[in-house]
Length: 175
Image (cartoon, rainbow, N blue to C red; front, top):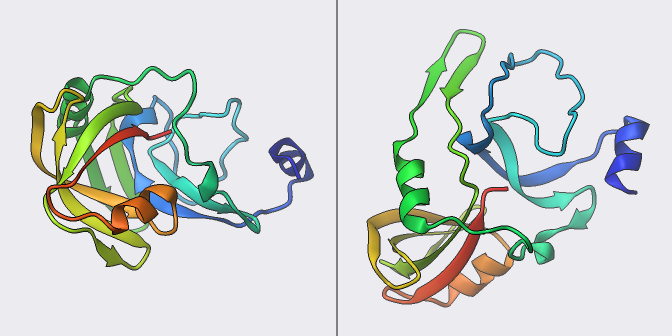
C-alpha cells in the first residue's frame, strides 16, 4: 500500500527504527506530549523527536534502501560537526511531560571520513564504536565521537569486520 493510500485510510502501521532526538528540524511549532497532532502539511514537518532511520514499515524491511540521496549537496564536515556540537538544546523533565527546547541547525547531510578508534562492538540493536572524524582530505575534525550503526543495515554489516585504525568514507544524512 502506498503511503498516501495508508494516510487516507487512517489505518495504523507498525514502524520500527531508531528513536532519537535531533534538532535539525525543530522549527517554531510547539507540541504537547499526549496531545493530538494535526496531519502534516509536508513530508518534513517541524519536529525534534523522530524514529529515524526507519528499519521496518509494516511488514517490510526497508534497510536495503539505505543509500546516499541523489540531488543532496553534502555539507562540509568541519561546519556540520561544529553545528552539531554547538547548537544548544535543553531537555526539562516534568511531572507529566518532558519539554525539549532547541533551535534548528539546518545541516542534515554531510560527507566525512570515520577512522575507528576501536573495533566496533555489538549492542542490542546494532553496533557501536568511537571514532575520529576527518574531512575528505583526511584532516582531523574530532578526536572521539560515538558512532552508532543500526542492526542489519548495510553500514552496520560493513562495520562489523573492521578494527581500530580502519577508515571509511561516509555520506551521512539525518533525513
